[in-house]
Image (cartoon, rainbow over all chains, first blue to last red; front, side, top):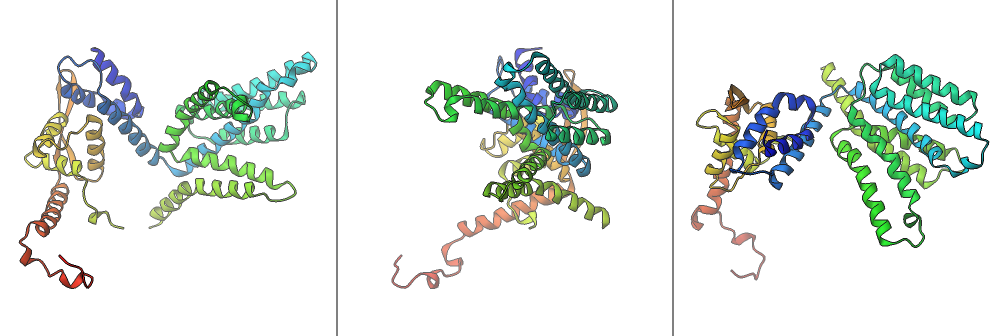
Length: 277
Length: 121
């Protein structure tokens, strides 16, 4: 295998796996035919075309998935992300240091188990993942480390996992880059409003963009993360609406979630009509 | 809105045109589009296959042959009757647009009545 072929194969990972199985050999043949003699690296033009072609192929595949299954998976994703967001402060909480060691240890076990159970949804059989989720929630309950929101999100997630007919796509794990990006933003003093060095700001932004890249590409090719985001934002809107007054932020959140959910809802309605005709 | 009235993009037009004289495989399509467009359309391989996927889905192009060259599958693509019709319709649209510019001035409708009063030339 020549270095050029190896590099082209690496670039072609932009395409969905099934597409690569069907077409990679053919496309690679054309790429190598078109290469100059002795060429060792893909040109910038060919590289860009392969990456955008891969993103388009992914978008086409995702748009052809059944809408209702998509909805259920999107809801699972929202539940998993909510858990991630609720769990992350635990890992960063400095006040844990002053607590009794047993309590701290129990919290770590409960939180770690819940996080591991969430990841299991992607890798384990349905029954295993549901049992792991429920066990982690029960441990949290018995040690009084659970908040109501955590329990709610965990139960919803367990329910959706029990209903699922397929595993969520591995690409969805990219979603878990969002909470770290969020917390890095919060940790860097410069982005909080003190007097940071330019280097610190630049570094923080670079890391945040790196974390956001996966979710962004994926959000472009798939309607489901938008819907998951809609569920998350709607949840936030409901929480903030329970305060004394409905803030502008609440309204914006609700509007955002409706806007994000719209494409998927339209697709479902359209499918229904096609079936009816 | 119907897509039929929207102008075909130039690479699409030349990909279809390259298949007019018979089926071709991927690299041959890239070479032929370059020849036919006098070097203006230089298709990247990724762009070509994105276009072929779309044209196949629209029924303008179909896969006709498969052979193994150097251990790799090489597929050939051909125009369908629908693709031929779309290509000819686009050629006629462009020819009509070109006639407007190329025709002698006296054969065009008089434009003077549209000019604001007092304007010269």
